[in-house]
Image (cartoon, rainbow, N blue to C red; front, side, top):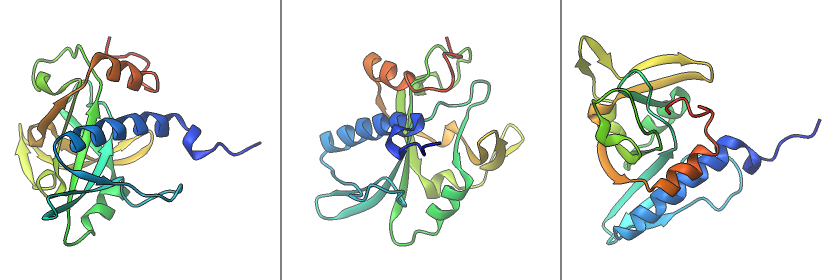
Length: 176
């Protein structure tokens, strides 16, 4: 059995779309975006700079928020690795193509880019009796979950961008 090329994986194709969207957004805001040149697994997606005075790490996750909870998250292993990064802020961008959620809260976040600095997402917060962030077991392993109230809306996704992302979604249109 032949091993699948990294770039042929569905989640990589979906992630590449999200990274392209965030790169374009950042460049339009005056940032210079640096990407790994190595075609292998890398520690983070991008390094961003502005006016030769600002430098940060940008990690892009092309994930949908949970359907019945105002939460999203990242792989726990990655979360711990990002926390180990010193001297640079790590900003997590979520590119979320979900639409028509049954819930009204955080409605302004769907079909958009949202996120925040990891240090802010990591602050212990009690929301409706539940402490965030917390670790959740998923079919794909452990995730560190964040409440969406910690997110800042960054930009809107176009209908075409949403459709491009949904081509690679494992949700099979559960949100319709």
